[in-house]
Length: 262
Image (cartoon, rainbow, N blue to C red; front, top):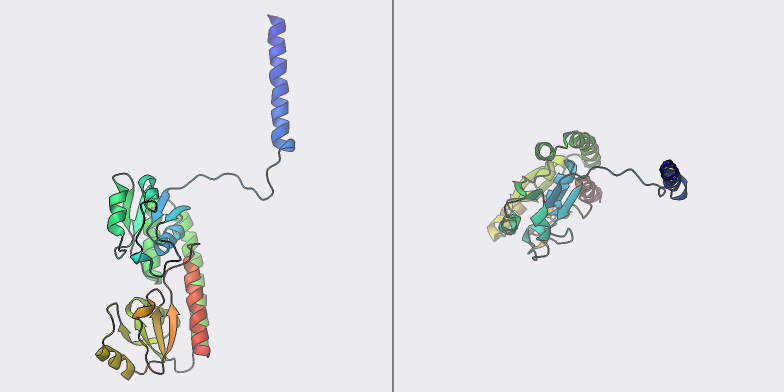
């Protein structure tokens, strides 16, 4: 019996040494690998804009229903396969103006929590919604770090446009959903149009204001009027597949600077 016990102990010790050797030397971790991190909540977002707010708030597992390549994501008609991820999501985020929001709610059943998100690319709205979502996700510290970066980047980009403006700054007309970009750029928005089609009388009124720029809705290209002597600047609100909300601000800054410099 003693011999058997001693033999077993020796075998266990040998196995332990072998396992230890394999994990430390024979099978090294891949270069650049990091230790696994705890998974956060599973989030399904209706569009990339909604998804960007979730990502800014600290969510790391975000699935977007409407592809970022769609011109106007709220009008996307999701297939049943697009909605499959909703069934096991912890949170389903959507904007009230998403045309397919009712289908999201129906697909959610009774498991995931439905959360409407107020979308507007202004500092106050972004801070309010990102902070609120972080409270839901339990990611407040991450959100605060992102918001600090956002405040710095917003100020830098806004100043970049303002420094490029002539004196006095040009007057602008704008699609209703893009008007707040005028404040970001330091422009005076003299008139707005949309979301309904522009009538001849509205076009005449806008033309009479003699805008030099039109802040056009890039996601609704057919909804923007041609105003004589006004340069069209296609402004975006929806980010790409990377869900980088700051990239929206960088893109619009680049387009606005190019417009006022030429």
